[in-house]
Image 1 (tube, rainbow, N blue to C red):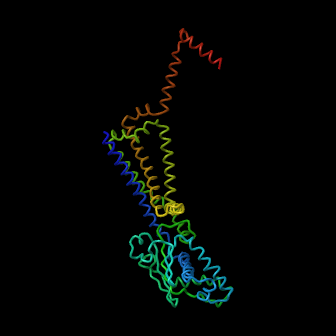
Image 2: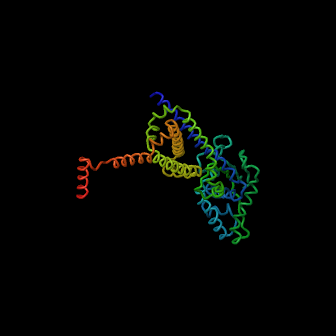
Length: 387
């Protein structure tokens, strides 16, 4: 029997772990489905991405405000100051807060980026293609002429980015019209920028992508995962239903909780279900929106953040699956002993009724005329008076 218990324990751990990990892996399905809610033909989103072009060029050229003015703008001093204050410099300040826009830029013998991923060679890297839903290469030659390459990204295709760029520049002139109608905004020169947007979007970001991603509601994400969760629950329940009861009932983790009376056990199971479902609901939402990854990284876990987050999710699902398995085992134990016998021996209500009934029988059979009973009664009365 001991060997059979060990085999059952090992099998149970393996099945719970595989089922929990499978549900967690299904988060990727939800992450990739997010691309359906992000419309990359939306000018607001594209303008927000292109808003990084001038600040990146400004940094790669490594020039100050005054030195950079002739290169980027022909206008009077007041218009120049307004342009830099309201656009390039402000956009540069916001770049670090746009966490969904990844970039790598080269120019003037300098390079800079905000990701360790080699997005420059993304089209030759299957792992990065799976990680990023949108990517684009945009370049300006020594004459400031724009060229672009979608790098094989289907979502980035069918879009004239030269037209988008020219329309984007018009938004800059809105700041200049009141100061200098003759202002000329020049394209950057000798710069190449690679932009990429991941499937796993960070909601703790100020970019337009995060804003429009709110249309992909958290509840939709949870609803997408529910079918996978049901499959996992059904799998472990069938496993418990088919496994020999005589072996399972000897395993402590099932055996000892089953000895608890029905009423407190049911209350405990219900509260446990509510608690663990609330935990899992929060984990799903904050895992998919990048909240926990961001927090774990800030705390200092760095490259281990995803591993820790995965463990948190898998352990939570494991708790839910074990709870479901225990419920099946408990129902089997009820049928094994018989419903009537189970109610008689495993409920507080019946236990109270039986003990109260015994007490009543003892009281009703008490003979007050018996000499020994008279002595006992007198002692009790004296004690009551003294108290």
